[in-house]
Amino acid sequence: MRILVVEDDSILADGLRVGLGMAGFTADVVGCLEDARAALAGNDYTALVLDLMLPDGSGLELLRELRSRRAGLPVLLLTARDQVQDRVAGLDAGADDYLGKPFDFDELAARLRALARRAEGRASGHITHDGLELDPGAHTAAINGRPLKLSRREFSVLQALAERPGRVLAKSDLEDRLYGWDEEVESNAVEVHIHHLRAKLGRDFIETLRGIGYRLRPEEKTPSRSVSASS
Image (tube, rainbow, N blue to C red; front, side):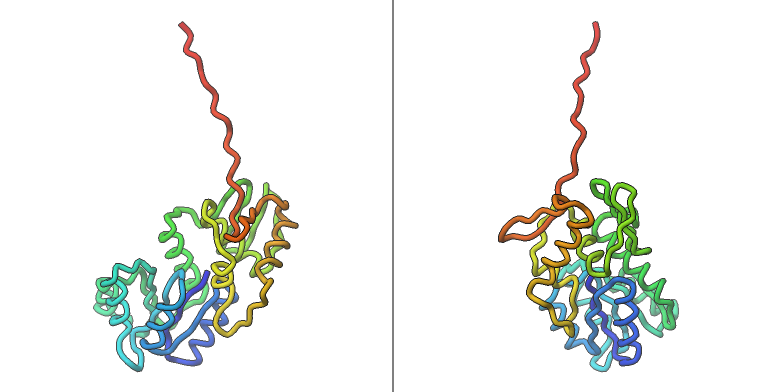
């Protein structure tokens, strides 16, 4: 899950990058509205963590711009301005959630997972597909009840595919999800992760559509039985 964080405090920004990374997120961090606009224009994010007090203006400006374009990107306001009127102004401007500073990283991660879940139309925090069960909060996975030992990036690839089981994700989509700006991506990194996942899930669990991308195999459906009415 790739997140954009707009925070001008360099110490907190580094902490957010590291803390969110440990929670399974990939976080790009910028410190002003201008850089945030450029990042949003060039990348696809799952959610936006937005400070209000920035060196070149208020985060509410960016929030209002997003909502005026009908952009549905989930936005969580993260700010020291935690008075009731501040929360009301942020929510009325289009924010989806609000967290005051100081905050707990576990709570921030849980709120981001909830925002992503709502955006995807999922009610449960668990993701299931054809015997696979993922718990993004606990970072655990199992197939047919058998626990799986996955690296952070293997888990992220599998989560990305399981969140959209009918959709084909291109290699570039998965790279964007896995790697931030400051991380170098090897040309075959996604293929390596897919290879490792197939070894743990079964070689046919993840399908390759040559020249297009990857998807989870369709779930097997139980054949319907026709019932004859007795006279």
